[in-house]
Length: 413
Image 1 (cartoon, one colour):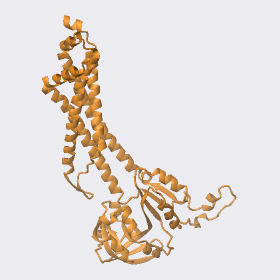
Image 2: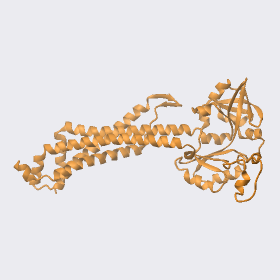
Image 3: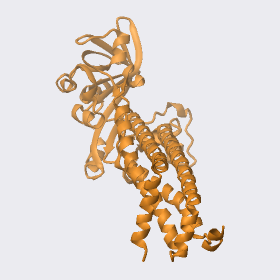
Image 4: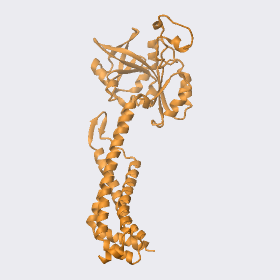
């Protein structure tokens, strides 16, 4: 009955004390803007760190893990038999993946798989002019390797695709090149653990900004790596797989594990510390931002309480005129919601502005030119909803209190 009148009264209350209304809106605005900035910044940092990690890390890896005791294979194959192998240490477990083509054929039928690359990784010593450094040389399929790890974008000298045309070519990490004094067109000698040695010509230098990679890794063609180890064309040591959503690898890992006898490992399993740090950082950002919103809510609660105390006689008169307790609640709740909506909209705009400003601050570290920032719409929606809920609760409590006022006792003084 009094719905339109209630809204009009709410507007009069808000405009009759503009300073008080602005202070309440600023509380919501500041809380929402800080929520957007904090979550956007922390999400941006997490995304940047994850992207940096994925420059050398696939979403899923298949490799030959071998049994826990590589020296006594017979006991593990026949655990309940009476077989006893003397001098078990002479038995060598077969390493690597021998039937890679069958696994690759299975991967091509998986809808989740976006890209995959085969590798032949060899522990070697890099030697040049008396310097010797321990590291890894990876024999790779040039095209697929770049699709999975985007290594072509990390080249600082030379071209990644040139590796296709040089069976004796090698691309080395920038720190490895510095430590060995290597430049383009120089020769570097590699020595395997089995005593095999061969010279390669440096045709490129890359930088991933991961020190452990840049100072110890080099790439050759997968054919050259197989030739170095004298293995067949179906041999690989690793199969690296990328999926559409890197957060959803469990289903693929579970499915592939049932089909092949090799170890199938997700990036979450092999990098639990990275997952934990990202989650912890996000929790801290959300906790700080929600605390700010709660503080803003207490401010609104106090302002609404003050407004009710100031207008207690008006409330009594309204109830004496026939306004119900529900009408009084609606009046003050409408005020709180208006404050929340306007403050929320301004807060989202301010949060976006702060995020854009921070995103332009120079930050020349690990290949990032500016500070990372995420502009996920989900953060803005959540911020607005949290702000609205906070103001609703902060407004409802004093509004409910006002609805219980006894007009007779107030008017009698």
